[in-house]
Length: 98
Figure 1 (cartoon, rainbow, N blue to C red):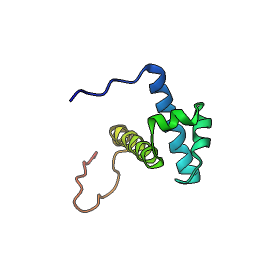
Figure 2 (cartoon, helix red, strand yellow):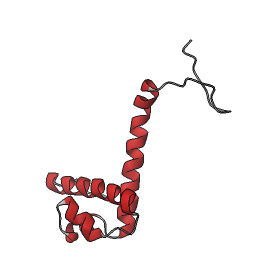
Figure 3 (cartoon, rainbow, N blue to C red):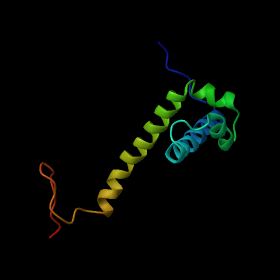
């Protein structure tokens, strides 16, 4: 089985923009937001949206996964910037800065 071909640069930009707009729309208006509105806000046609995400569920899942990845990627920086200052919850390891 061969790996899928990477997207062209313009197709990748469209996909990324769709995910960015969709995540904002879902957070603001909920999962029933108009996909036409998402496509329009992203600057693409509805066909482009469906080419990348064949169902509403596929778009919701991809947007969720992207937001979760962003959160996970932010953890090291957050831990460095905001070290624990008080007692930890049971079962958590805390480092003492004193």
